[in-house]
Every structure is written in structure tokens, then in C-alpha cells.
Length: 457
Image (cartoon, rainbow, N blue to C red; front, side, top):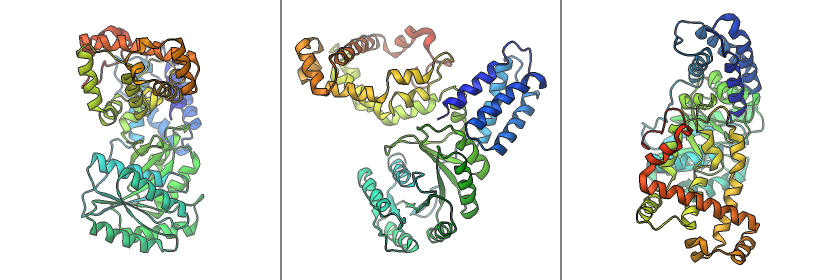
């Protein structure tokens, strides 16, 4: 989401190379570049002005460490200010109330409220072990009611039925009674939206909010909406007592300015980010981690948390035992690894959280190993017989031709996959003999700054 902004901020800091210290004169042009970078990222003008002024004041103050280079000094100041503008500290949902705790989702049509309701329900069910119920009061769009019912079934949570001929306030009252009767811990209310702000929608959402009396009122906003998101955030903040913001479609082509603008204008914390279409693609928002991501420093902590949540521990342990017994790494194992990578959001999602050196372009790496290629590789393995997966060396020319035809790919694609398997097999042998430490020591200077994340040493 922040690729362009990250690049421009890095370029601006590099302009200070060779300067002895930060002064009013030598940071003037650099701050102008930072201002342009923020405006290009769709950050609201008032937010940019106050942000630049705070950076100038801090950069010229005594708090900057004398051991750093001027470029590092400025990055340190920008990072601190980004953390502040993004909210300072992460704020978890407040579920300390008499059940059912009501969570109210509001926002414009198309912002992603319905999918966010399902993602949030799944997160509360799996991470917080809560019994969750979903209800839609979007009587203007019957498809939204059906969509929410379908999603509730997919993730295994309760759903309160509703129909287009009911009043939204009556639906909410009935849903609260039903949630109480079924001993649900949390009730998530998905509200109606419009393409634009209008008096009728605001009056309806205000009435439904009053009837729901929610513990949390979250404004759901599309990260790609630009300045429209800022205007709608201001309107909803004036209408409802918002307690937080959810950014959706953060995995798309958003420039990132919405995250900075909405938090500053509403004063409400960003709680979550939607980073994909699947119901598990919802990340808790951490201002310090996001500031590091914006400045190209990566977000290893979030990556480690995702690995712990999404990587199958059973499969990992079985593979480790298998390798220790010297039974080798076959193509079924490779398929498991590829599928788990897809569960992590693919290469693009993982690269975004890694602190890559400045001379490496994440976009180029994404192109080399994108999700489509991974899906094709899985299709090739699926086209093989169990014996071929177990004994890849038996795959001769005629077998390759059959496998390629079955997967709808070329023979060259099969050859590339087999070559990749050989490389991974060698790597796995090293891991089984000397463990992860030995493998990482062999990588030498290719490790990210700060070494391996906690729990991997």
C-alpha cells in the first residue's frame, strides 16, 4: 500500500548524504520532497502541513542523536512523527461489557463492511474464543443480507435472519434478543451504505445506532478512496460517536494517505486493516509497525505472528521428523509449503513485511514469484501420481509431457518446478543437519538488520 510513499521518503533522506548536521537550510529541500511525497499519497493538505511543521521542529531540536548521520536523524524523526499521527499505540477492541457486546459497522457502500463483519467475526471466534452472531440491517440491498448469511455459514458463526421489508431498528432489537437467548458473546451489526453521504442515510444510521447501543462503533473506509474517504470520515464522525476505524483493501493499489488522514482528522484509532478477500485477511493495526513499513524498515513482528497463526504446526512437525529420519523432501512436501505460503497472503504480503535492503525492489521480487505462479506450480504437482510426487527422479520426458498437459502448462514449467524442488531439498537437508541457525549463518550478510526475529534464533 505504501510502496510509492516509502520510495519517495527514502530518496528525500538520501539527499542529506554528506551533510555534517541537520540545519534549517539543508533540510528545506528535503522537507519539500517529503511534502510532495505525502500529497502524492493522497494525504489531506491540513495533515501534511502540520506533519511537516512538527518534523522541522523536532529535526532541529536537541533530541536527535549525535551518533547518527543526518539522513538517519531525519528518518528517526519522521518515524516518531508517523507513529504519533497513526495513533501512538494500538488499541484493542473493548469487549468488557455485559454480553452480547454489540459492535456496529458504518461506512459508505462499497467500503467493504459486509466482508469486514465476517473477517472480524472469524478473528473474534478464533483468537478471542468468542461466540459471535452476525446481523445485517441493510434493507436497501437484499444481496448484502444473503452475502452475510453465506459468510456466517462459511466461518461457522451464528446469523440472525433479516429481510428487506423490515425496519432496521426492529431487526437490531430482535437480533439483540436472539443473541442473548443463544448466549452469544458478541453481536456484529452490518449497516446500510450509500454511494455518497446523504441526510436520509445519516438519519437511518443514527436511529439504528441508538437502538443498538453498541460498545464499539467502527467506521469502515476504503483505503483507495483518497480524499472522498476523508470527507466521509468527517461526516460519520459528526453523526456517530465513533470508537475506531477499519481500513479495507489495504492490499490493493492504495497510496496509503487515507491511513494518515483519517486518523488525524477523526482522532479515532485505526483498529484493523483488511489485506485480502479471504475471511482471515484482517490484521490488527499497530502504529509503530506501520510507521516502520512506510519507511521501508519492514514489519517482522507481524510476519512472525502470521506464521504462528496460519502455518500448520502439525505439518511442520511431521516434515521436521521426516527430514531428521533422512527420508527426504518430496513434491508433496513442496506442495504443502506452497499452500502454506498462499495462506500467508502470498509472496507479496510477506515481502511487504520484510526489511529489504534499499537496492532491492520488492516489486521485482513479487514479479518473480507471484501468486499466479504459485497456483500453477500447485496445479502441476496435482497433475502427478502419488509415486511421482514421492520419487521425482522417475519423472522422464513422457511423464513430463503428460503432467504438463494435465495441468494446462508447458513442459518448461514442469522442468522449472523440478529444479526448484531440488534446490529446496538441498536447503532442507542443511536444515535437518545443522538446524535453522546453521542455515542462517550460511546466508551471512543477507540477513535483515537486527538478525532473526524472536523465536527463530
